[in-house]
Amino acid sequence: MRIRVKEFLLRKKEVCLVAGIVVIHFLVNYIWLKLDNFPLWFDFGGYYKRSIDLFYASQKGWVDFVQALQGVGRYYEAYFPYRLILPLFSLPWYYLFGLSTDTAVMSSFLFMAIALFFTYAIASKLFDRPTGVLAAFILSTSPAFFIYYRRFSPDAAIIGLIGLTAYFLLCSDNFQRRGYSVLFGLGLGLSMMTKELSIVFIFGIVIYVLYKIFFYRSFLDARGRKRALINFTIALCLAGVLMFPLYWLHRQRILLSLFGGPFSNAMRQKYGMPAPLSLQGLTYYIYMIFDFGISPFACVFFILGLYLFLKRKIDHKWFLIVWLLSSYVILSSAQTKAWYYGISLLIPIVLITSFGVNTLFRNKKARFLLIVIMVIGGIQSLLVYSFPVFKVLDFFHLKKEYDISNTINEDWKLAEIVDYIRDNLSVAQKDALVYVGADLNALSPMTLDYVAAEKKVSLRFAGSHLIIEDILECDFVVFKSGIELGTFFPLEQARRVKEALMKNRQFIKLQKEFSLPDGSQILIYKNLSL
Image (cartoon, rainbow, N blue to C red; front, side):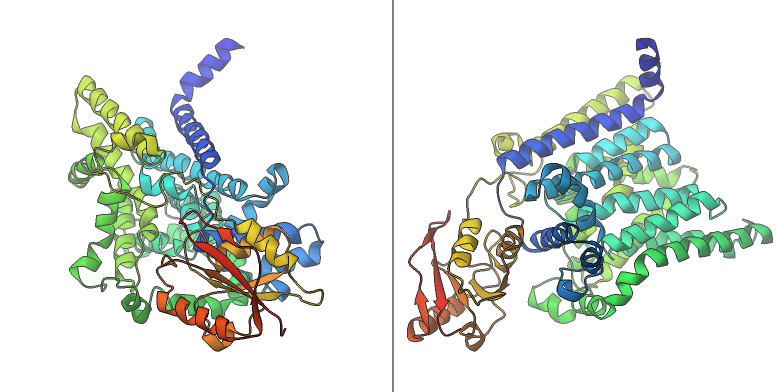
C-alpha cells in the first residue's frame, strides 16, 4: 500500500504540489479570519446579504427558494440578483458550519482552488507541468489575488471560472471536440452568472478562435468548419440557457448598471477616474499589475518571459497574447476603473512570467536558484500582506499600506445597534426604515443591513442619498459623532441632520449610546409620530 501511494505521489507530484499550495492558503486564510473581525463592507456585505436571503429561503420551501434564486417577489431588491453563483455556492457551507461572515468567506475559497488548478492546467498544456506549478505558485502569492479571497467578492470568484473556461476552450481544439466545447459553454454560463465582467476576459480569445476557424482557409476544411460551427452553437446555447432566465428578468437593472458604471462618463468624473484615452487611463492597470499584482521582482521575469515567448515558436502562442491584450484593451476603454476589475489579468501574466523563469537559464542549478528566490519572494509577499507582525519584511512594496490586507480586530457594535433598534420597535412597526448617518467601511447601511438579515430583524436601511425631508420620515436615525463619516458622506450633511433632529419634536434620543473604535459615539433617535 505504501509503495502504491509513493508511486502515485511521484507520478502526480506536480498536482500534489499545487494541492499543497491550496492547503497552505486554506490554513493561512483560516488563521487570518480567526484574527480578523472587521465587517464585510460595501459590495462584500451586499453579496453576503444575498446569500443570507437564499439560506433562509431554502428553509421555507421550494416556492420561496425559487423566488429568492430569481430575485423576484419579496426578494426583488436583492443585491445584483443576476450575480447568483457566489451567494448560491455558500449555502452548503452554511448548513455544515453555520451562518457567519467567516463561513461565507471560506466558501469562496473553492474558487481560489479552481483558479490555481486551472492555471496549472493551462500552463501544463501550453508549456510543461513544472511551469504549471510555478505559475500556480506565482498567482497564489500575488497580493491582489489572495487578499480578495478574504472578502466575499465575485471579482475573486470569476478568476477561477475564467481560467476554467479558457482551459476548456483551449482543449476544445478550435471547437473540434464536442465534450470540451460543452464544458466551455457551461464555464461561460457560470462565469457570466458570477459577474458579467467575465465576458471582458473571454470575448477576445473566443473571437480569435472563430477567426482561425472561418478565415484561415488552410486551417480547417469545410467539414471541420461545419463541426466547429455546430459545437460552438451548442456551447453558446448552453451558456444562454444558464444565463437567460436571470438576465432577462433583470435586463433593465443590468442595462442601468452598465450605463451607470463602465460606460458612465458622469461617474468617472464624480470619482476622479482617469479618462480612457489618456496616458493615465491607458496605463491604469499596468500600474496595478506592477504595484499590487505580482511583485516587482516577478515583473522583471514577466517582461523577460514576454520577450522570450514572442521570440520562440510555441503552440497556441497567439491564444495567450490575444487573451492578455484583448482583456487589457477592453478594460482600459471603459469609463470607470477599479484595480480589482483587473485581477483576472493575472492568469495570462503569471503564465508568461513562469515561462520566463523556466526558460531564462539552461543551467539547471541557475534555474533552481532562481526558482528558490521566486519562492522566497512569494512567501514574503504572503506574510507581509497577511499579518501586521511581518511588515518588517516589506522590502519590495516600500511599506505601502492597503486597508484590506492585514487583520483588524475592532468591534463596531453592529449587532448591538440592530438589537437595540429591534427592542425599541413598536408592536405595529414592520419593515421600519432606519437612516444611517455614516458611510464608513465598518459602519454603513450595507453592514447594518446584513447584520439585521442574519438576526431575521425586518429593517430597511438608507444612507446619504436621502434629503432632510425624507430623513425626518424615517422610523429611526442612527447618528455618528466625530468627523470620520466616510468618503461619500459630507460632514456638512451630518451637521444639517443633527440640527433638524434637535428642532423636530417628533424625534426623541434613545437612552443608550454606543462607543466605537474610532472614539466616536452612536446616538439613536426614534420617530414617535410613526
